[in-house]
Image (spheres, rainbow, N blue to C red):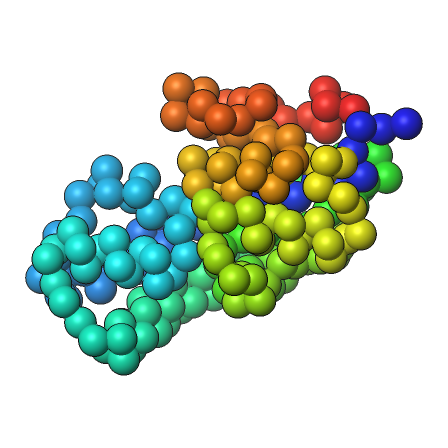
Length: 214
């Protein structure tokens, strides 16, 4: 009997390289606010939801805005991002991403997406992988964003899997914490010196094989 019933994926940095598109949109907004974001700041935004990212940027630039102004700013950034991802195609999948999803399905496991991005559904369609995903956890439907476990727990619920029989795959520290606090096994994609709470770390998506975990 397989160890797992479901594999829960993050999107940005795991299946598609859209993190840089998010950051480009945030940098554009930052410049409009007089806040310059160095490339290294991108790491701080990984796995953080839209309003959380905005709060980090405003704090970084010592900028204060009302709640309504923040909502407008977040919507403006989202406009920049959605315009950019409208040009995404299956060629923008990370190397190995489609093969990984197909292998997981072939192994008889459910697949759910646990992404902080509210734009995930249209992006999955443009990337050509929507038919491979059984369920998408809606970040707007959970109480707390990553690093809280809510989003991964919701993803597991949607595919009818108990947490201890789920494998979560993430590339961010916040995401790994979310998986672990949900009581799941965590696979980090990236640097093991950064993703220290992960149970396993694989350098790239292309090097992930579900057979290694069954």
